Length: 330
Image 1 (cartoon, rainbow, N blue to C red):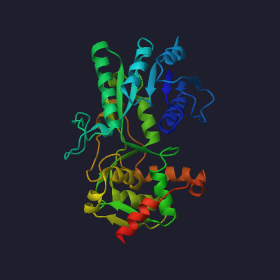
Image 2: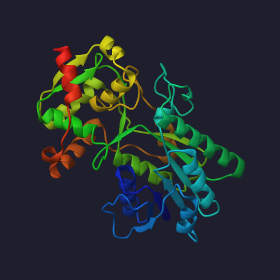
Image 3: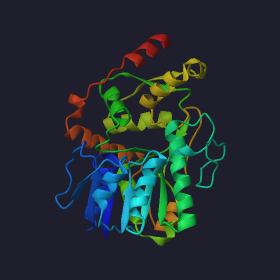
Image 4: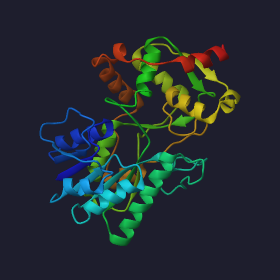
């Protein structure tokens, strides 16, 4: 197949490009040219600012793609511009969305038909993803535009450019730092390995079962915050020195400060005190798909990459916010 990846030079997009090339597809990457990456030699490059409709049209004129993977669309204008250019020139458009769109639920696991959060408590990121999804769904229903939505939970793995996630935990454990865990550490979560999620995207391509559909894309197993720390420590061969942050202190912390800190403490993109487990049954059924990694094997693979690239000696982190909280709790 002839495939276009929009945003194919960083993490999710980069691993998707390698997955597609491994399976013999002709891959073109479109981005602004600001971020460079070590792409396979067979990959064709197109440079354009997707925010500029005239640049997009010029860059993609006379181009036809069997499938387009859009990894870097964040607002309605992004999907409006690209779908306007692609109409009649692609057989399938796959949009990367997020599980942050869902409302809180006491019923688990969360399936694709669960209510979404359109309240003022929704983040700008989540609200914009929902707007993009609604636009694409209408386009499918009214114009039969072949689209699919992939809602990703938190993703981790080699080449992760969001270094405050698993890589920060590696540094904490390697440096024998105290590990802060919100509440009692029993909130359940789920993350997916970047290679599994690239494989799921590849399997969606030109699969008519997926047209007009929305899929949760994440790992199959889930874990508590405490279990996440224990698994990381096991992979690194260390014993974690844990401090649990009482719930009343978590609740007293300013929302923006708390959320920023939580993002650094554990694999969170959802509320720290509300378990989020997502069903991937629909994905597995429609695609005959099964994740290759569980949490431990995924963390092992990621840590091997981390070490082989000497990141344990080159990554620099500011732990002052954590130290301040540790001193308060001591």
